[in-house]
Length: 445
Image (cartoon, rainbow, N blue to C red; front, side, top):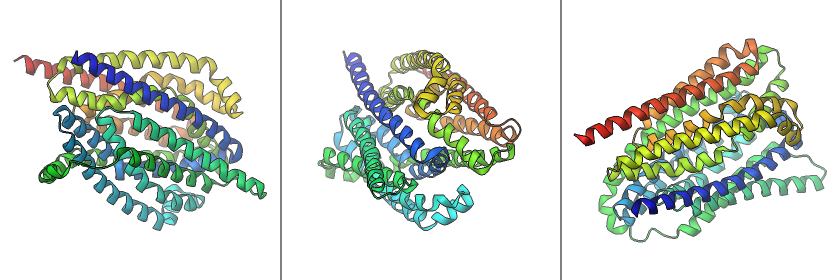
């Protein structure tokens, strides 16, 4: 009965997140089409250049803390301690707000330095200055979402995700219409203000729904212990994410530069980069809305199962996850191979985007599998393993960027993406098989 109830909660939560994700991705598709036709492929390339800064800022301020909140909240709820769960959220919010404020001030102050020496394009300066305002609201709703993931109530994160996208796209479109009425063109800065407004809207929704921290006062005597527990997981997770994002930033910044060595002009290199990351990858990542939803709930489910010693549930979850992701992945691969060129021309009016979609379609089974298995490893308390696997993937892609792209062009980078995903997926399966088998053997002694 208990297993049936847990399964029902998991399926319901996954469906809610998936529906919200699909709606968000659909809106995102139209947004990408809109951007591709207003700021062009080169503009998309510049826009995508700052995405590593966004990811790195989130890694520093909230990513590890959100995951830690989710894990420890699920553990406390497994012990029927809702006040303890709220205390973990309270501690995480304090730490995350402090980090986000410092990060925002740093990026705003050093935007010229970061743009010229790191991103290599002075047009990123105003974008980074606006982006600096996004981290504080982002960390607030990320932490609150982590709490709701932990208690397996995904309606709130789903609503926040949807509201964020609506506010983001709606505000950009409104600014575009105002500029159009004044005879002005779309600017890249508008897209970043849209991002900030989206984060703010999502934060307002999450705060209004959560309410208060009623009941945590009686748990304050455990404040130091809870902080130590939270940081014991958050610090290595954050460090891992920061290192990975630094590698990813290096990869993304170097790709246009290495394309220039292949023979492209600066404008052509940024255009190809924008087509790949802003158009084609958006299509390839669309089905991952399902696996992302599963991943979010796998962590607290595995964590709770481990806390009560339910090895059978862990083993069954891993097996079904592998089967489901491979099935979804191979279906998507077939679909992208057949329709990729049509999608590129129909949605973006760009033949190269269609070629990229067809080539990248082969990564789907391994891409979707990697994300879900990483979440299981986090739930089992092994963030170090996922860090090592992701680092291996980054190293493979960077190798292709540095040594093959200048000689063979962008297609060699696509091969590097495929090889990196295959290696990570196979290693994750091997490690989980060894880990689970070892746990079962110990419990049988």
